[in-house]
Image (cartoon, rainbow, N blue to C red; front, side):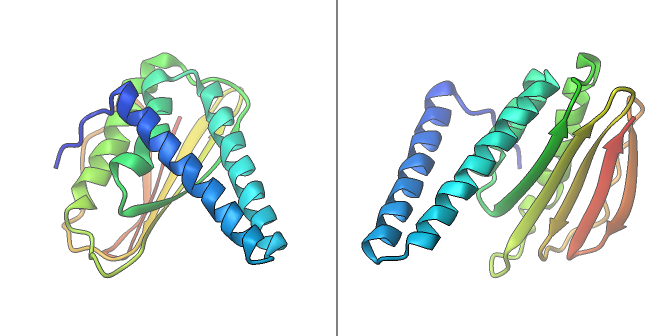
Length: 171
């Protein structure tokens, strides 16, 4: 499976759709008198926007675009992303990061069990002299172990089963 990049028009259409869904969810909760639930939706969306803003500090055009559009290109994955980006990553890593992340998703995506929830946890952290991107996919799939030679950065795989796949990209 190869999923192409989204056009600007497609990305805007997805963004507008998500935005309207959240507004409808807030309105529905308010109509039902569930003010706390409406406030939680507003808080969650605010936190999501902060994370997306924070990853822009990576200054990696391809990686940031990949992270912003991941949910729209792979809708079977529920994304939970955290970030603490204090310094940018050198641009020489940009294409390699995207390629590695994309290859891992593609490796299992067509084999995901359609009756299971699949959660992808991504944590992006950068510091003055190092960075790491933690990837943890939970769900159920049938696929052989993933292996690809990577020389530009380090990859540490902590777990790779048919229900949990956890690795960290770092330098």
